[in-house]
Image (tube, rainbow, N blue to C red; front, side, top):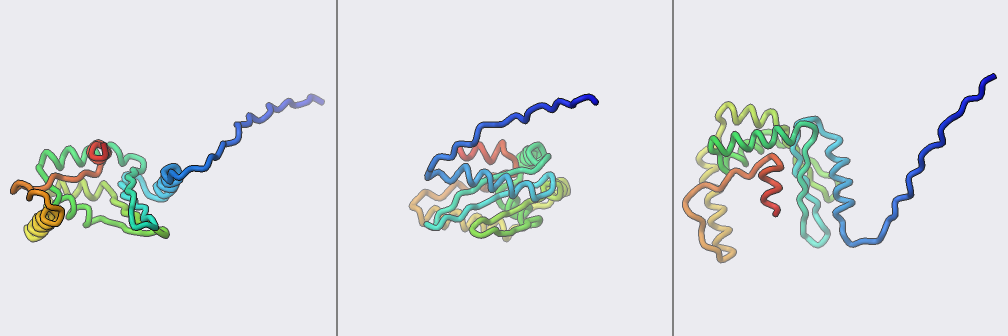
Length: 166
């Protein structure tokens, strides 16, 4: 009877946990877990509401979402679409849910691309409301009112969204 030799399992060193006041590693793990629950080509806008009233926003994309989101942004900027259009298109396909203090806004990107290709734009009344909101925010903060031009498309891909965080 031949004896069978099995390789010993490779053991990884235990993860060293150190106390920290930085919630970002835990938030990143939660974001990864949330993203795993959504279908491909989805853009996730995840807000962690803190007990002190603050909030931290995370962006995540499921499989195929990064290139599709960047493609949508390039097309929207070339159109040119603005923030009113962004709010309108995003609102058409929004799937909102919560997990405790975490708000999850899921945006399936394929339908957004379809609306963009079909030429869907925000109605004029939504454009006027957004302009008025920007003016009120400027007045409340003591800033000069912005020039009379539309606010730029916000973005659904990491090239635009992550560039604004820098």
